[in-house]
Image 1 (cartoon, rainbow, N blue to C red):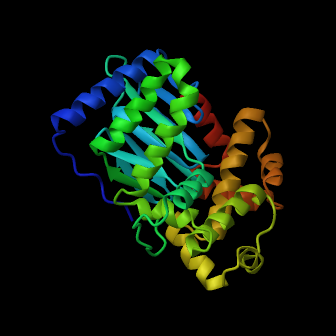
Image 2 (cartoon, rainbow, N blue to C red):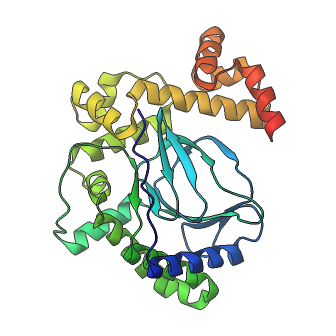
Length: 309
């Protein structure tokens, strides 16, 4: 099932002016293709000049904004498209992949990624008191929402600080806090709110996700995981799938296969050793599941990947 694609509309003049300035700031700060850390904690500037496809990776909570270009992100069988009219939020760590839809040397893809610390959301909620954010049933831990002037203005002010380094220590934390506030007050703000509030079922699911991320090589018993996060087995399964689009076992399998692929590609391990490292006891089972997930057996898949790099 595919997520609804954003509906494009003409930008209003103020929004367009801010988008252009943000693109210019990113262009000055990222002169060559790649992702670059900045002097502002958690802020990355990203530039690409061709339509590359990213390998599946464990994405951490973050706000992603494109000032120029468009991108498709896949979560399981679902796809999400965002562009300068729409930003993307990953609210809980989960395995995703993606591809750029528009990027050339003359018209590069220019974007920012601002990492989100759930503890900062918790602090903001505690300090602000009741914010009128409604409680909703568990929903995906990734969403796309329409850009608005208030959020883009705050993001632009944060990126501008890179050009006045002496102001970063004092002003960047204030602007980051404003950005989080605006996300919480947005149409999808309840997703961040539910993940941050300690007593919510969604927050407990996020704890289950974190546990699997840290222990994916180990055997997984759903009963033990449910006990770990204080949920019933049925509630954990239902809520987990609502947030990630996968069951806990499917999620663990995807992490294992992605890590095995990384080990073979970057550390030159053979398939048997990579499968063993990530928790598979049977090489034949590993090969079957790898082929099913990536569309080819390990050796053929790696040959294809190396030719594309």
